[in-house]
Length: 331
Image 1: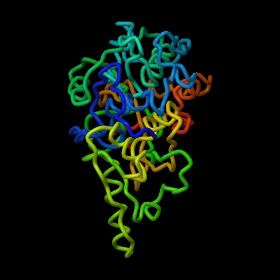
Image 2 (image 1 turned 135 degrees about the vertical axis):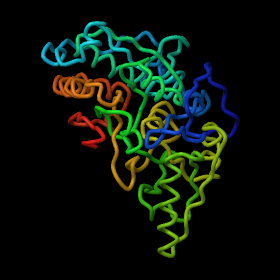
Image 3 (image 1 turned 90 degrees about the vertical axis):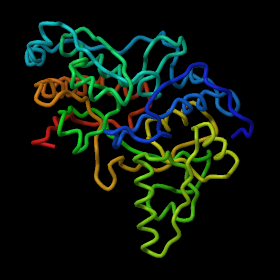
Image 4 (image 1 turned 180 degrees about the horizontal axis):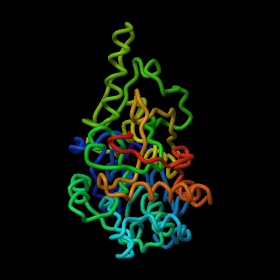
């Protein structure tokens, strides 16, 4: 890890950051701040993802596409079928590799728009991507600005009061550590006495705080939790040995580890710990879209295009084998 300050990103990526307080509805799947992308693509100690041939961020790549399934398309709510397009809401700016701006500073790329494009294809609809902020998506969805939101949204009881869901990815947290670390992190016992960076007010901080409570009750030393103002500062602290690890969403930390040669991920913790949770396409409760949406995702899984998208963005560790509908009545 370099000890010098990391260069700034070539673009400003706006998201409801992992290092800021959660939005009112935020739960298991917190978007990550822009500095993760900046640090990941830093030239000292990291390297350019496109140049390394690991993840293509050029914006020139074509999306993986599918074909219409007429039987599933016929079950889409009439208003959407008549309009002929699927209006998809996602988050402005960037949460690589989920949704972010390509190197041209214009093209929106990532796993979220790629999966939504595939579903639109399967439903026989044009793909209409519209961006909003993390704080605004719930009201925008309820207000009819979108048919569906793809924004790394995790299913929880609070959201089920207002929305229905079609699952498409698991949600995990992980520890980012220096390359070659043998800490074997991933359980409450493994963090005893360690110094762990974590975003203030985030779900991952909740998990570590509960783990510390368990450790203290068992007579073991708790971990020291540290908050930093940016992800770049976290990586500097990790390289300097001031912290042992950084606990954050698996998807974004996999991106960092893929685009750098001095860090790696360690351990996998369900984002809903101690329960499990899923990331899902989010639609208005009772809209009738969740069922055809899940059917489309299952068809994409069967044909293999779903897996191609996750492989493209190094997210295969969060792949599901089936999409299911989640409602207040059937969570």
